[in-house]
Length: 115
Image (cartoon, rainbow, N blue to C red; front, side, top):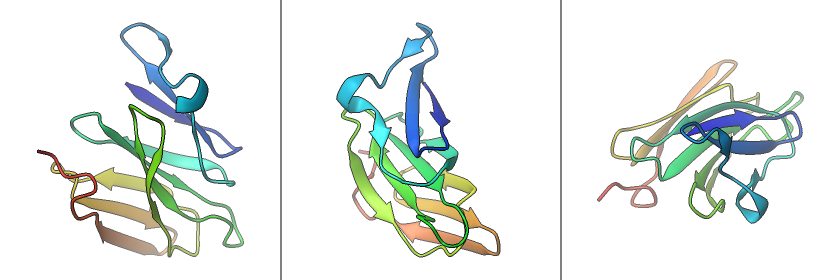
């Protein structure tokens, strides 16, 4: 599975094995109003974390998405510059987000916990 972020805030999930869009119709990820700069998948492929934003301080957020449903699971707010790097821990319990001068580690609790 691959992910592409676009300037309009949309994220396209791509099935790399079958070379086709995996996020058709209502499963397309469309949350932020700002450009998406980074994407990271969970190790089990259940989730994708996206980072977005523009200056000055427009929708500088990270979002956790369920790849099966296309639904936003969690919104991470607090950056004052675009979120340009995102990562998820192996157990999906923590997220790392990076913007211009800020690094944040988020406790996702049991939201994305691997079983």
